[in-house]
Length: 186
Image (cartoon, rainbow, N blue to C red):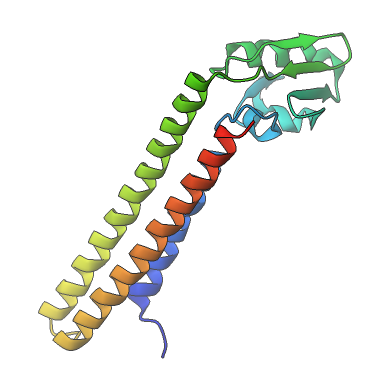
C-alpha cells in the first residue's frame, strides 16, 4: 500500500530533524580529538569568514591531538586566535608550520556536563518531532472535517503518524545513547 502524502511529508520533516541533531552531536566535545569539533570555527580570510577546514588540513595525531596545517602559512596566527576565541576551551600550540591542539583527559565533571548537553540537544530534537506530529495531525483532522478524508482513514493515518513519530523518537534515543557512550569511554 502506498504511503499517504501527509505521512510521507511528516517522515521527511522528521528525518531532517534527526539529521540536524546528528550534526549538532558531532560538534559536541567528547575528549577524543576530532576534526568535526573545529568545523564551526571561522577565520577572517581576506574579509570573508571562512571555516578552518577550507583553509587547512585537520588531521588527528593519536587519540588526543589534532594537527592543523594551513595551506597558506600566513594564516597560522589567525587560526590560532580563532581557536582561542572559540568557546571550546582548547589551547593551540603554533610551531611556525602547524598548529597542534592537545585534548586533555576530561574530568568526570566535564564528561557529565557534555552528556547533559547531548541530552538537551536530543530533547530539542524530540520537541521538533512532536511539533511536526502536531502539525500533521491538525492537517489530518482538518481534512476529515472538510470531508476530504473519511473518519476510518483519518484514524488509520493518525495511527501511522504516531507509529512514525515513535520510530523517530527511538532513533533520537539511540543517537543519545551512542553519544553518551562515546563521551564516557576512556
